[in-house]
Length: 143
Image (cartoon, rainbow, N blue to C red):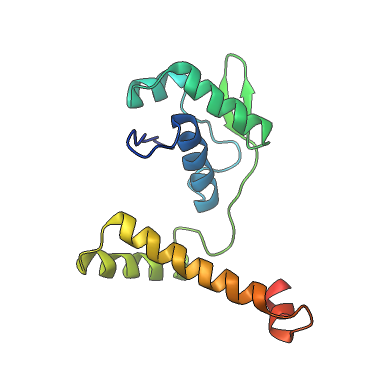
């Protein structure tokens, strides 16, 4: 089961944080189709946020087709966002865990690591987008 953590200093609304953390758990395979999300009461007890905030997040996820609210039973995952390579036992995930440990050992904080990863993704995406539509390397990546 997912355990929500709300960062009040982030400037990101709490309901958005709940949605993002749920999506992350769906991508990582931590949550699977059929799994039950914590009740709004449980989330409120763990995070000290308003119950309406939790309900808004759950409604947003329901509208996105990620979960289903079953009156009297709870909220259940209806769709996975997991992709190959994100599983707990994937080599990519192990490499990233090793890299993250090295970055931490080098003194980098979470924000530094996120900035590095974001910059690397941006560079990769810019390189990919700058190739001509007929470029064989682009066709390979688009396949």
